[in-house]
Length: 151
Image 1 (cartoon, helix red, strand yellow):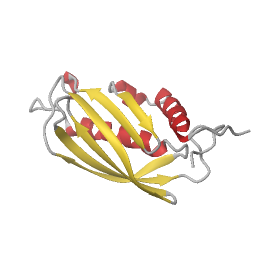
Image 2 (image 1 turned 135 degrees about the vertical axis):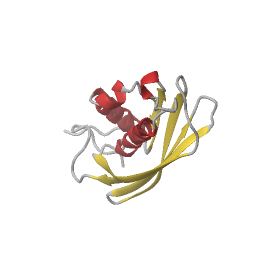
Image 3 (image 1 turned 180 degrees about the horizontal axis):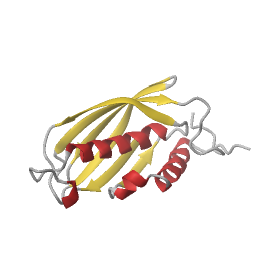
Image 4 (image 1 turned 180 degrees about the vertical axis):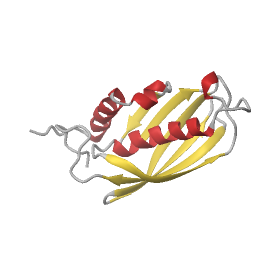
């Protein structure tokens, strides 16, 4: 039996199931600030153990925040979706104590592929990085099995 919910409730249910099992995002202290069909907002505070030899946040952590935000946005329709590729441009440094916020927007969703743009800013709303992710949906694999996909 499949429950049919509005797309926002589907996105919220997917968020809850995904985050419960997301050890990487939780381990880095990420928080999900917002979720909606095709979009997500995540934040993370830069810790001392995230700094590289120049006392700036290692680019891998900025990328991981963007990738996690991308994952929540592209799975929000309740169809298991994975990254097929991404590119990131880091345009400014972030430092210990900065609160980074990643905001994902669905640019295109057609068939089994999608394109998502993610902007990462700091607490002063200064641009830190831009990320573009390409996604691929796994046919017939819902994230929340007893929930109909949001269409």
